Image (tube, rainbow, N blue to C red; front, side, top):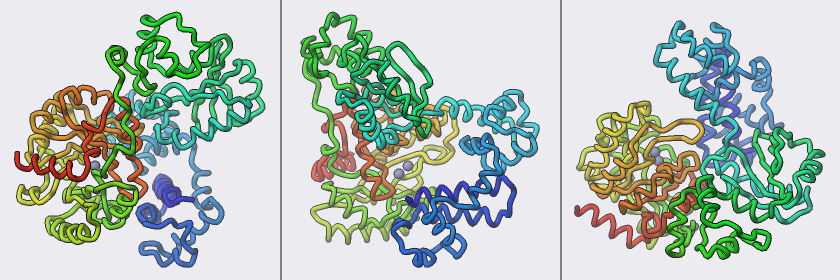
Length: 557
Ligand SMILES: [Zn+2]
Ligand SMILES: [Zn+2]
């Protein structure tokens, strides 16, 4: 059991205790335990039981519960309280913006026991009759529930990525067949997956027969050429058979967006798919340069491929350094030294440490004095680590008026500054644009961090006019981050084409808060491939010397 799973159990216990109106001191101590465990630098499962009690912030009773979880996989008090809570009320915990106290009121005073009922009550204007629920809360609850219902049953690409290969080998064993291929959104590396799709070289009937014996798969839809199943954890899996359609034809077309597929068929018909072993062979037959599945989104790419071969896909190995990372000086879990050593071992040439700034008090943001201390420490480390280099940076909060939260004198001490919005995310497009444009115009801003603040499947970003932001970045020589955290992937790849057209640099950054976080780079690369980002237009593909030269030039301007 991993730390985050243990932390999740405590966090759920805290929330349910609040919902049930139990001793608030207890609920608070569960929440504190969750926070402490989440931030631990070592895995509790690998810590000897006796030592668990010695960890700072973990007392006798928390320690016992951790051991119970590690030994039995469950927590009795949590099981009991879940038992007492209607499933619909548990589901309300997924609605961002209504905390446990509000859920308690919704359940006990309004007698609402499900998400659907709550939405109905909001639309009937009933919520605002209760204490603590204004017109604004009611409006926000409607928005969040609609968003929640829309994304229910959807998964992040990274979540599917973890289990996709296992699913495929499972099917290979069941069907005793080697010709199985991923297709659809997953094959096209789209950031949110509603269904995992595979093409199987067997008839739809056979597929159904063979799978009927497997109880983990519930058949929920049956079509002429495909079957939709619901597997464990709510994941939908669509299996395409190959009845009279050749395998490669199924794979090819399911790997295209609708727009691309229609345009392709109009221009290239009568292809003999039965003689094609690979997708490359299909393109060869059309005398069209190869377009990988991840780039089969819009018609424009067909025109591009007609003219010349498409540039090679950006690879994770093309990323030369880690830009945007946090250490335990703010809310990261590891020391700067540990982060730097890990980056060095992975073959990167540099690490940009960009801890949170002073306004981010919840993340232990850096005061002016701590910045000075950190810079002295980084200078020391750099002497030991050369030729590897740690760059001094900060993820400076963009304040309500669009200014950054340090004086120019302090901002000028960094090698580079990442400007991001972390507070007051609920705002109109006008407000968001004012804040962002002001930050972009600040001469100290090097990179604009996670542009919309979205968290995929849980929080819509604030509304922005992407093209106007991109134009402002051109005018002020500001780089736009492609935040590679699998829940962010922000700037959205759909807007990168315009950015590249305008010669704006993109920076694929992991926003790493831990050593594992460094590997998130790959999710950024996968969506960057869709947008045809290459080494030349990605800042984190710059080598150490190139980055130094770039930053020097930026400072002179
Ligand atoms: Zn951030
Ligand atoms: Zn960050």
